Amino acid sequence: MSKDEATDPAIARKRRKARIQRKRPLEEAPEAVKSAEAELSDSSDEPQRKRPHITGIKKDARYDPGVEMSREDLREWRKEARRVRNRESAAASRRRTRDRISELEDQVESISQKYAAALKRIVELEAAAAVSNSSCSDEDET
Image 1: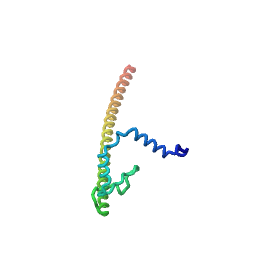
Image 2 (image 1 turned 30 degrees about the vertical axis):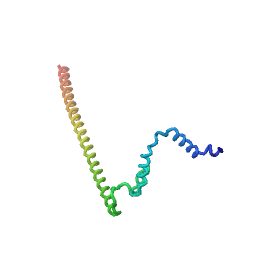
Image 3 (image 1 turned 90 degrees about the horizontal axis):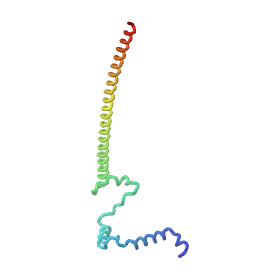
Image 4 (image 1 turned 45 degrees about the horizontal axis):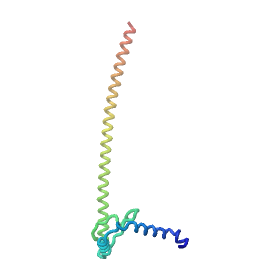
């Protein structure tokens, strides 16, 4: 074994994979399952769909109707799908806005009641203070 073979990461990776495979031979699928999967994957009747990339699905593949359509029909279908999603999103946004408005109206009502109660208490205290001041001044005069 040369020095390059010992330090080459690809060779080291292959060795690790081989070692792991030797340690876990029972975890492999039975031959019947493997052959069934191979038949399914080899069928040329259906075109193989690419898996979505990790960063997301390309714009054209976002709105897939699941049936064969002409380009023009597909474009119209996608437009309609966007309209529906936009309509639902707008309705949800309006509902959230209405909920927030009613919540704020409830807060205003609560604060208004507290304010009115505080003003009433202030008036009562001022009246009590005026009565006590007038009674004190009456006693001072006599």
